[in-house]
Length: 128
Image 1 (cartoon, helix red, strand yellow):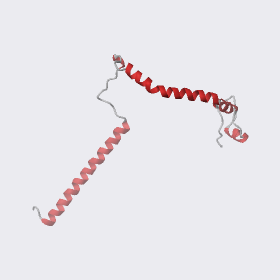
Image 2 (cartoon, rainbow, N blue to C red; image 1 turned 180 degrees about the horizontal axis):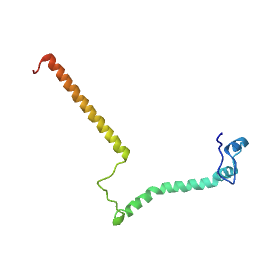
Image 3 (cartoon, rainbow, N blue to C red; image 1 turned 90 degrees about the vertical axis):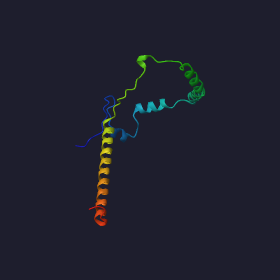
Image 4 (cartoon, rainbow, N blue to C red; image 1 turned 45 degrees about the vertical axis):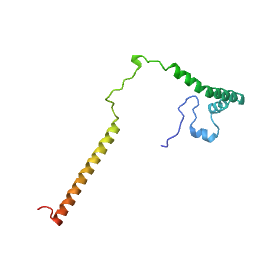
């Protein structure tokens, strides 16, 4: 049985294949697209508003910082850092794997040094 891509919205009841066959967008998409394009006058007003907001942002930030300079938050609003911050499980597992790999590297290095010293002792007789 082939799976069909069917819309769950009961008001429209059309599948995606049906819409693709008709090659027209659904009515709701057309109305949204029409509403989404504002008029040039609305765009100009919005641009002017944003330009004024951006120009006044630094002054507003300065006044806000000056007003909040002596502000102390309420005791219950302050956050105290706990010394025992828990790390996520995947971070702990990654750290454990790294430490195990480092431990294995140290064991291999010590074994190689002992083997090299033993071989040199056979060759040059450093001790009996």
